Image (tube, rainbow, N blue to C red; front, side, top):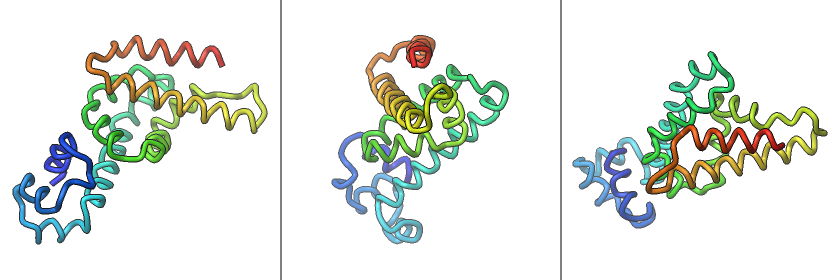
Length: 165
């Protein structure tokens, strides 16, 4: 069902995908669909939760060994870029970004990038927000481009931005 929905999402928005169409693409009957989900949105939420859980599970050992492992995080996102871009396209951007940066392993590495130790608590809050939103915009542009730059180049850009804060 998940693969069927993701395939359909490449062609049209979620609100234009019928349960009938989803079941046909997934080669299941409607009864089976409704046994597990109430709507296409419920299935999409599960796909998003699975994506974030798998991302955290894959990155946790890397980040524990090296909290500055930005290149490893970017490599992993690059490997998952098709799913990342599909989810960004159909999930409200603010929600997706918030979920992404609350994943413990991602939060840890980007919190390090947004270290605002020399600032007041109020300033630090806005600096972190700026870094997170700016980083998300960079990730979306990079992963959504037809011919993305090498991981090392994006890591360099993000590191340069961090050094300027």
